[in-house]
Length: 590
Image (cartoon, rainbow, N blue to C red; front, side, top):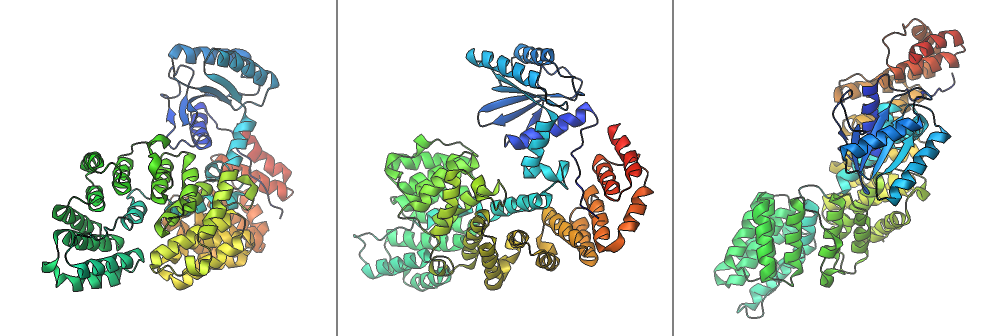
C-alpha cells in the first residue's frame, strides 16, 4: 500500500482557530508565553493574541472566514480598532483561514507603508497557506497539527534533540556550570608574608589538584594538612577552608560547600577570591537579595577584581536581571570567564548575543575546561532549536562557525576530551561535541561518540539516547534504531518513543511496535490519535492491509477527529476505495 499524507485541517470554529494561532505565532516568534486577549466573542480592540518578538510586541487578529470573507474593509476596520484601543504593538497580523488574495496583500502593504512613514505599527495579512507553511516549517508544531507530515519523524527527533541539547548543554537554573567554572579560577594563592612557606606550598599543591579535577586526592591532602592547622596563619586557614568548600561543591555537596565558603570569609575577608565566594555562598543558599547586596558592597571594596565581578554578576543573573554589553568592563573583555558569564546571561535572555559571546569565550587563550564546556553547551543548544539537521547551510554563518569551534575546542579528542578525569564532565563535553557533529551533518561521528560514552560512562548512557537514535535515523539504520529503542525504552521520552514507534510501524515490526507503544502509554496515558494511525500502518506493513481497510470501511465517520478523518480518507484512496474515502471527506467539509 502506498504511503499517504495527512493534510492540515482547518479549525472548526473561531475559538479553535484562535488557539491554533496562539500556538503557531508563539513558536514563529519564539515567545513561550503568548497571551490571548480576552475570549472569543468579547470586544478585543482589533487584537485577539499578543506575542513578544525581538522587534517588540505583535498583535494577531484571527479571522476564520471562507475564501473571499476577508476584504480590504476588514483590514481597515481591524487597523482602526487596534488604533482606537491604543495597543502598544509594532505589527498587526491579520491571520485568516481564507485563501491567499493578491489584492488583500497589496492593500495591506500600502497601508503598512503609509503607517510606517508616520511611525505607526505595520500591517500584514497571512492566509491559510502561510499558516500551514509555518506549521510545516517549525518542528514544534508538527506533533499537534501535522503529526504525519513529510519529515514528521525527523521533526519529532529534532524536538527530542533540542530537549536533550538543552538538558546536557545549556546552563541550568542552578548555575552549576558557571559556578564550577568560576570557582576553580577563584582559588586563593599564597601570600608572600606567610611565615610558614611549607604550608603555602602544600596548599598550592591542593590548588593544582582541584584545577586538575582530582577532587578525591585534594580532599585527602587537605585531611592530612588538618593535623597541622594550628601552625597555619589566618590566611592559610582561610585558604584551607575555602579549598574544602570547593572540593565539596565540585562533588555536588552544595549546602556543605556554602558553609565552608562563609567560614573562610570570616577567617580572612581581605582577599578578593575569598570575598567572591561569600557572594556565591549566599547564591547557593538561595538568598539572592543578600547575594546581590554583598555583590554591590564587595565590588566597592574590590573594584578591579574579576573574581568579585563574576560572582556579583552571577547573582544578578540569578535574580533574572537582564544585562547589556556595556556592563562588561573593558578590562575583562578578553577574559574567558567574563565572556562565558555574558554568554550565559544572553542565553537566559534569549538574545542572539549568546552565541557571539560563547564563541569569544571558546577562543579566549585562558579558556579552561568548564568555560569551554559551558560555551559549547550554549552554542549547541541554540543550534538545537533549529533541529538536528543534515542541511548544514540552514544555519547562519556565526552559528555554523560556532559549531565548528565547539568541535575544535576539544581537539585532539584523545587528550582534550577523553582524558578528562571526572566522568560526568567528560560525558557532558563529549555530548556537546557529538551534538555539534550531528548538527553539522556528521551522524556517523556523533554515533561513535555516543557509543563510546555508553561503553566508558554507562551511568550517562540514558542522557545520550536521543542523540543515538538521531544518528541511526540519519544513517538510515532503521533496524538498529528499533533494536536500540527497545533496549532503552525507559530512557526515551514521549517524542523519542513516538519516533521509535513510527520506525517500527514503517518496518512492520509488530512485536517491537507493541512494546514501544506500551511504554508510550505508560509514559503518557492519554490516547493519541497518531498512535492508532501508526497501529494501522504497522498492520499494513506486516501483511494485514486488507484487515485494516475492512476495519476503516466499517468505522462510522461521525465523531472522529480531523486527523483521523484525513488519515482514513487518504488510506481508502490509496486502497482504491474512492467512494468510501468520500464519506470521510464529506465529514471533514462539515
